Length: 115
Image 1 (cartoon, rainbow, N blue to C red):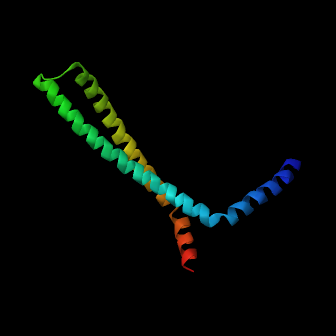
Image 2: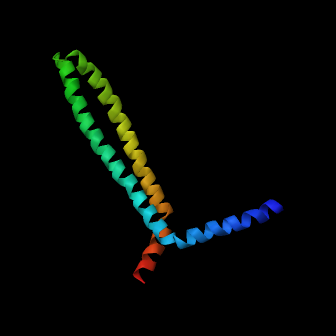
Image 3: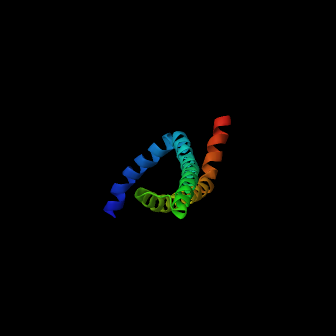
């Protein structure tokens, strides 16, 4: 019982700090959520570039005009483009998930801003 009584002042201090910084916390959180969107799209753009480069190098191999490093590039580009696609889709999934999860807080902050 003594441990719970010792935690109460610390919890009150934490809640007071959150209460004072609520608006800036919501703004920062909203900006952080958009980082997921930006990074997801950027990953998908890079993956399309890597896929295009990989196709060009695969064509070199199939035409018999490939150097030794071309084989290394093809492996790296193929593997890397798959990883980038998975990473981009995962980031966009997290963006949607976080946007949905915190949409009520963002709307509340926006309504307070307009008042």
